[in-house]
Length: 311
Image (tube, rainbow, N blue to C red; front, side):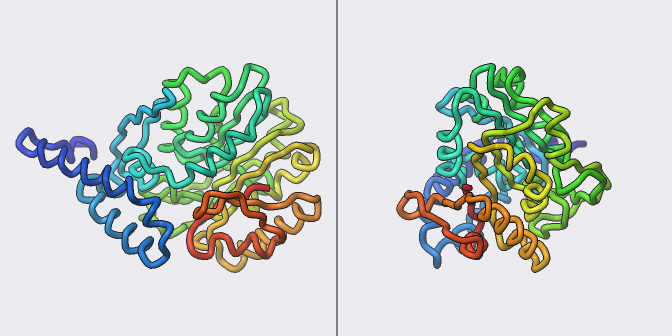
């Protein structure tokens, strides 16, 4: 019996199921406000997670469809924290995503590195004409399956190319840690979800693979690879230098940075700032753009929680 069959509700419990889903929708609705209060954010998140896992146990794969007001449809795994939040109407990066999408034009060449189920890849494609394109990279097999499915269900195969590849500093091989919740898989064990298996997989640099895809420069890149953003950047420096109008959006999260990765990210940021790139974030309260003047300031962004740095 597969995991989905194990958790199908009986007819007798369907009313309780509907009631629990309503509770979860309400609590997810207030999650953004709770996150604006430092003393409330952690206990509220833990409470919501414990309530959610009674209905959607972490790591138990359960694919559900989400129909957005924009007309887009996404299939997500509600056994994954990111997918479950999205299913109940909360997307932590909503304002960051709107800024990223607003910086695209109809001809943009967009890269999504660490695409997960494809929110950025699919949403970006809706902004493009056939002269633009999206290349989405996702090495986790479960997430990659959802990525492909979401591109297809939204009929965007002509604009989005999916690659089940790990992107890093150079071509070769890397350990890849598959966790129960795919959002926390990566080139190291994040310890934020139960480890399912460790694989040895190929890794490519963007400077190496993009010429094979017929690309010499790009217009926008989103990077979310659980602490190895520095590796993606280091393997893309030639491309970055050839891309004068490039927008970079990258996750900075202290939870994913040990001392070695922190120093490596600092080195990458110094390199970018020396090329006259400057950082910005969407400040959560109020929703305004805030300048990040130095690499040192950029590294403090994710000290309490994750943040997206725009360059």
